[in-house]
Length: 195
Image (cartoon, rainbow, N blue to C red; front, side):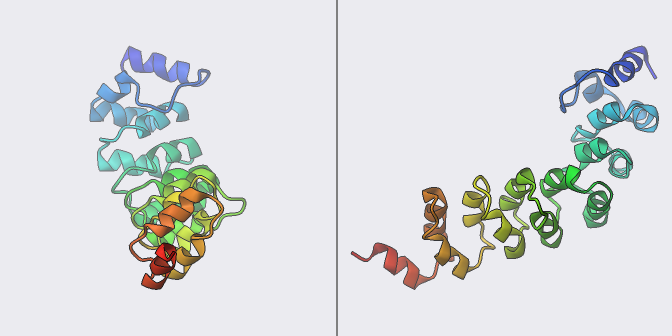
């Protein structure tokens, strides 16, 4: 490994570094990335995981990492597949829920699991509420979260009977999202515009 990466690996253990790819890691070729993944401290592996252009072998190795912060960093990467995402959730639990929910390939059935978690993981609910694969089962718990409810109320997978109930929601933004939803039953729409 070169000296810059050696210094970074040494500093990473005792320094708080933001979860963004550092320029040196962003510029590292695949060979150096493979070395970092194989030998660097977890903090550096997590920084590698924040890169969005990782080769599949490196991405998959980071997804299997025993350290939760490494798995969390790589969880939103497309291409991980349901089995890897489920393994991450099984291994690391709530530490990775929000980032797994942000993965564009996460299937609806998987999204329902962190949605049902008690106590709720608010960031996970927010990601689920906006996820295109979210199912009604995954969206219903999102309606109990003040930040996620507005997005969940606008989601195409929300059932019509739930939309009708949301018209009386205390948050006007949630009620407005339900009122604007294309799946709102016609009789509910008529009731909204009746004098």
